[in-house]
Amino acid sequence: MTHTITHWINGRSRAGTSSRSGEVHNPATGEVTAHVALASADEVDHAVAAAAEAFTTWQRVSIAKRSAILFRFRELLDTHADELASIIVGEHGKVHSDALGEIARGLEVVDLACGIPQLLKGDFSEQASTGIDVYSFRQALGPVAVISPFNFPAMVPLWFFPIAIAAGNTVVLKPSEKDPSAADFLAGLWHRAGLPDGVFNVVHGDKVAVDRLLEHPDIAAVSFVGSTPVARHVYETGTRHGKRVQALGGAKNHMLVLPDADLDLAADAAVSAGFGAAGERCMAISVLVAVDPAGDDLVRRIRERMARVQVGPGNARESEMGPLITAAHRDKVASYLEAGLCDGATLAVDGREHPVTGADRDAGFWLGPTLFDDVAPGMRVYDDEIFGPVLCVVRVGSYDEGLALINANPYGNGTAIFTNDGGAARRFRSEVQVGMVGVNVPIPVPVAYHSFGGWKASLFGDTHAYGEEGVKFFTRNKAVTERWPDHSHRGLNLGFPTHA
Image (cartoon, rainbow, N blue to C red; front, side, top):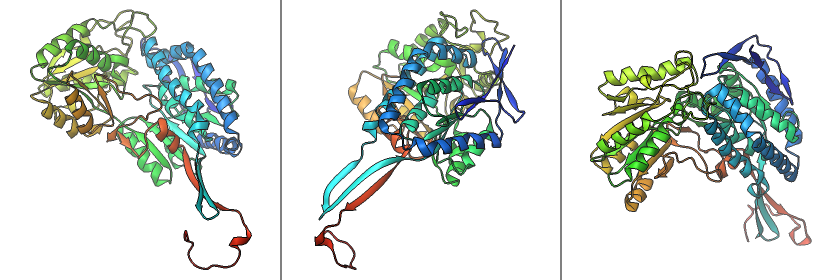
């Protein structure tokens, strides 16, 4: 029996009235486990109206009380992390340990938001001019929208809404319709933490809901994570309607391996970063750039490790990699295997032949880890963001050639260099045109008190997620110039005010 996943508006579950719904699958079995209501524009309007009404009071709640609610939410999320991870496994398919990992990284941002009293401290200049003090502080924007992708149904929303709420905003979250239940679970935790009704709302839906949020006059800002074409649409549409927008797009993350690197460490990193979560990560390593003469040895070590990867259901303890999110996405990723062969790449490991343990390969959305060698720009497996368990190896003759390859790519999300040469690493981190850089770290996702975001076609907007930039995105600065009357300043003076 399936159930219906409903919206969460103004502190309670709200059934959909649009008569449209979508199927939610267990990717490991292919079974339909639920139907999710897909919102109409009217239902989005109800959620925004609730957020707008709640903002009138929430913005005036003391920072101390907001922080206290954040602390309660943080404890509830930590206590129920295992339960939330099981929900993610059932709808996304990633292994349980990986789901726990994404919750842990989201908790880092909640920890940051709990310190909102420190983060919102303003500046003060006494006696800026005679008898005049100048000070500035940051205030909330209003109702904001968060539009999140399927690959991290808990972590990506947690990048945004804890800081937004702590700063005094109200939130409408539109999660992916492919794995929507995590969002409702988080809404329930907020309710238990004592968050007032309407401050956090969840609207399920597709493009209809997204476009209405982008156009709605009461939405002040939009945070988005997804593919680059959609990120561009979100940014252009949202800004055209007068909104502040941060839209994080796609990626083609390169890992440059120099001949002096620890090749066992590099091979471990390439397999872990390339095939974790079945490659459905915007920070996954999808291109390994091997500097001669390291290529042959590195490919051999990677193939040995790929053969040992345990592919199976995410709820099985022994599984290291689960299925892909949907049959359609699995088929799209699998189509790149033939495309790569047609373009002249060498299929070193065919993921279609990888064993699946504990599940029916034909029923679930399975594709094992895949390795292409002898890849070059212009091939579809190199140019496209595949977003699946496909790792491409490009051979280059030097550090300079590898750097030029990375910098020529239109994406600029994440990159890594593996080397024992400190000078080369220092040069790379300075010269590479990518927003997040790892040195012997394959997935350089910054900790919460720094900020997450790429360059070039991987980010639309000027502000990255969480950290200090996240606080600035969800607030706006107000400067006050103040003088209290005294007898020495009486009388008219029609000249422009000066410091004299």
